[in-house]
Length: 147
Image (cartoon, rainbow, N blue to C red; front, top):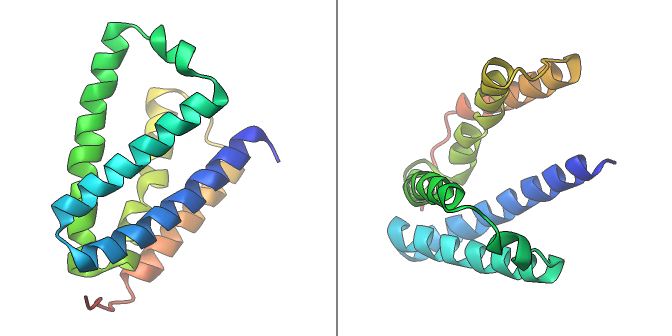
């Protein structure tokens, strides 16, 4: 297993874990507090990882323009995106929200092929097809979640 595959597997497991915690939090409080708590927790974990791995000195040398771009992307992705995910989980449930969010491999693969000239290989196509079929099966199941 390559390092990239290991990181992707860890990201998938982390995403599933976060979705489960997010759903439970959504049952106890509103989506805005849930999203804020999630973001705060993830930020603490990322900062701890940065200290443990020894990347603090690397972060100190980041150009201001890169920080500005990162901050802007963070605002839109995390503040708006995760709040909308929390609201979605309250309305249609965690499984169906997860299925819709799982469209990211399709969008990401297409954008990578067009914008970054990434190769569109058979294994990539197979993975995207599996993701899209899974999304379709869950989305077409029609079951509504109860809070």
